[in-house]
Length: 294
Image (cartoon, rainbow, N blue to C red; front, side, top):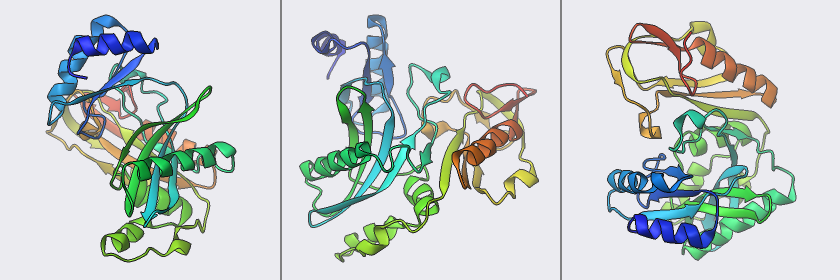
């Protein structure tokens, strides 16, 4: 799309409740907004254009349903999808109309179901349609209750956000970064190494402290030292000015947590959000979406 008129015309043609606008050439949720009303269109178009590099924009139907991130390894047309993670949006309403996920879960709730095989078939077909004969396809998929799996987008690269380098190796034992290096060097990947050797529950969650001057950060040493806390990194330090966070390029940090099941890992997530604190403009706040005072 090129302007607000295009958005209005297509939205009427599609006859859907919400649409999403985004730049074609950015990542980390930069410039991505969900639109529910006509009066949001013009501002969202300018925001997305300002966040992009080329000024080119995409308009998409917003489809409710669980979302999956995937990574497909391809060698001369043969494809496998060892990266398969549930994307997490709970608690992110405070950022709307901006859309940002808050990490993910592995293993997926779709593991062992026909829906997982359908998602894999979709992303592998999408990679081939894009001409990725040897390399990697990073897919984002929504599973519509009525229409089944639908592509949101695909990139011809590995993911960031700890997905390829953290969640999948920790959860499955698969290091497909090595496979992608092999492909880049013209070598066929070791297909056996792309099969899971363990089934550990893994989650990553981000810190979203509210805007203001950061005066101090409190990270309890006993929490950081827990065996299940495999990563805890913060992006801001005392004296920094934290902006109003509208993309993942501005988030305040990340924690990657492991355990035998989701309940155990969820307890670590809850503890991390409760005990890692940021003193901003004289008040202690959490990094949980919404920035509750503590």
